Length: 326
Image (cartoon, rainbow, N blue to C red):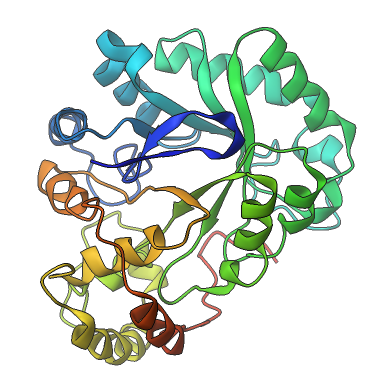
């Protein structure tokens, strides 16, 4: 496993992190035994960055991660997230911060997360949504300062709204933030236009989520794929969308080689090949997922020629998630 600095925080994080939504629920039946084995295997393979959120399984993901790392807490990096007080995603321009992220709410949620995790601090606390109008607001800034002063967090960041690669750009440029989590992958390349360059300039750590486009870029989802009961993607990935994506995914197979033998590894290496990226957090519910994904951190990034060619495979599809508010 290779490691990188998480922006200006100076924290060393594994290139492949552990995305903790899936072990909390929402992707089919929960299997805590399998999840715990996945967490332990990740630790064995050098994964030290674990990303979760208060709403993942109503704290269940945090509890599993806390249990898995309890004996090695000082050797791992935990990031979690504060949900909007409205519990609506994404936050919209017309929603005042007093309704979504008031200072006392951020502090209260952090206290809940600490209890779930069984720790007295988290390395990175994040707002679980963001809109540009909040950049100058005092509520979140006051909460971040308080939590740092109390030793409850080391760094503060935001998670960009789904499919919104531009929303946090001004926040990054303001110098007020330590990290930004954003969707970035072979299909969703828009962060490379403005967000990632701004992060490099301001030394803001970038946490990449959804590197597999919710599983599509692994090449394992086609028209015959059967989603497990309770998997939210069964509503999002309609047959017509899968057909459209499958054609594009087949075109990526020509990029496979000894250094990127699978579509999943190609997808992860695409993310890691941008110098602004600190870590990539695929969801991993099974030890096998962990083993396969960790292979991408071998120090062999994609060539410039390959990256130029992959630009032609960007696919801005506009498929909103089922929970998106209008």
